Length: 618
Image (cartoon, rainbow, N blue to C red; front, side, top):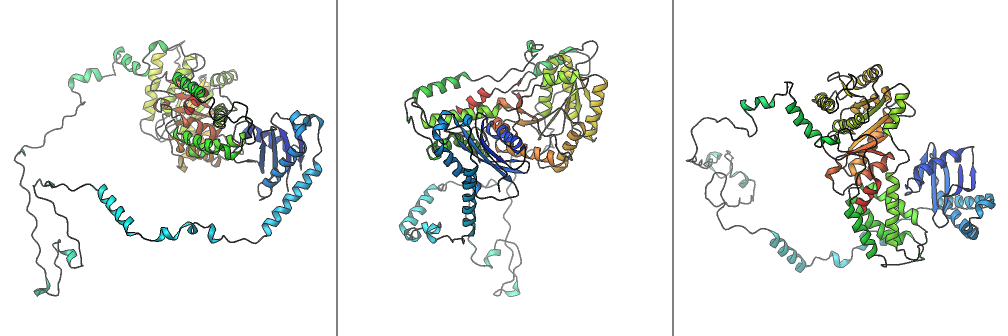
């Protein structure tokens, strides 16, 4: 039995609906619209919300959506047929009214039609279930595809294969092969062992033989040792000279303990090569720049293919789009998009265009490509935008610090990009406290201490107060407790923002994931950022899914705090293979807040959706 059924237009007007309880459509269908339809995730035609399973069909010609809902515990096999039959009947009966959009304003009573089609679908399902299972015929199996001719061994084909394999083998050298001892003797192949007795002929073992007196075989002589090289010296072991070991003369240059500005300035040049950028990063972060060469090549390609394959007036079907979608899927995978995500995106594009009528100067490939570009832009522009500065100012107005927690796997650059974000916040006149909650990795606290010293050197104290401070408790401490103490200290010292650095952990490490869930549950940060590499492909899906799953499983709250945004690092190393951004945005539905593009403090950008899509589709 269905709990709800609704027909509505993509503009939001409801044509007809049925529900068993009040406000069921309002909550469930609105969640479907926000999460699936508006986010271009209409691939498999199903959506789960609370205890309901929603199945839907799209009519792209009349811009209609048919949705049926039932309890997840039920296995209703007739829902798909019911939606198809209902869609066909509505199209046939009210085609003219749907073209004029009059049906939405006139209203229509579909109660009898709904009951009739639902009853027919239930009867069909019962008949299919009651039919005995028909065994597969031999003609339908793979074995039947093998012909008699393919089973007959042909000697001529076998000889050809042997000759081909012999040609591929490298020819034996007629020259002498020098063995390890340096002797110029020709290496001979070992004889093939024909019996158990011959198997021990090369070993110095006393093996009893029936035809020998005393029953013992004489041991064979060991091969003579090679003579020592005449160039070998009789001197003792020499001390190894390392290339960059340094000497006593370099001690003064390497001593950073003295209050000298020379080495400090040299170090700061490595972190901020262009010192003119200091003080000029106030406001929003600069976006990624679009490659102009990609734009030119794309526009020229469109002009060249303008009159190729015109099929104006044709109604698109999934079979028509299958070749183009398959090529685009392979293209996305080649651009580092996860294979599962690429398949779902292409399925969503196919469902979106199925039944659409092409214009006069439109081709199938160009229409599919344009729809894919639109879907990618929608994915990279999520429903929630994260404005760190605005939210931090709002928290400051409330008299509390704004808390950001960084998490991710090992080696992705959490501490380095935390320092970049800290530099940008200082540029916007924010006082920052860094909480060293990575109490596991050796050197993590010292790394943050070095960043704090460099950041304070670039931005001298204002009114006697440093712009950035470090709260540390050493190693081996409880990370959640250290974060709680740091937040309490930030409130007392009136810090604006607390950046919590956590230890890197693999997504399958249950103890460390439980520790991260505890830190988030106890301290309730305003923002949880996942730091991920732009180099990964399918691994990005596994990392994000398991991080969110573990945060939900190890939390005792009914509404656990999951990942709120993404920091994409090492973006300068991938050229145009930017598919990881699409994979991460698709899996989480959360925005990519920051993009790391280098090693210095100024190498921080915001994501430009058009730049990413342009690189993907090139």
